[in-house]
Image (cartoon, rainbow, N blue to C red; front, side, top):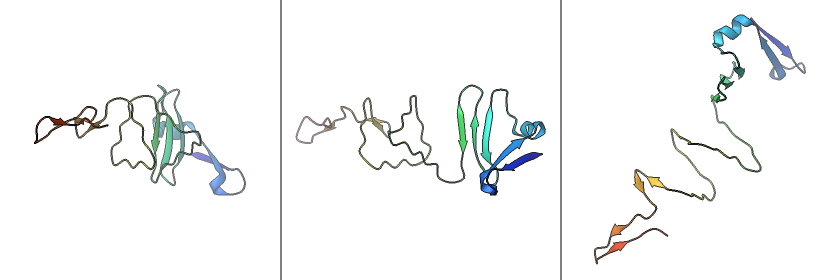
Length: 116
């Protein structure tokens, strides 16, 4: 059973309150919280150890006028599109090749590079 309370008379503004048996179907652990739209198939799961899992069936857009910061390693599985300038501090690898200090042999002798 899942109780839905319409907040302004429209289904799109409803708040759902699941009962204990419905929560068991989610297999939530103590300390976890679930926010979701089961019609659209989207969800946000706040994990017991502090992590956050997001599942979306369409684009995920973050509006952050002052910017967004990710502290920690980040993995992108898929293509990344960057619109705007990009500043990189540290080592940059492209296809396993370290770009910082990368040189090529010059056919006239010596090396060409590094990138500046």
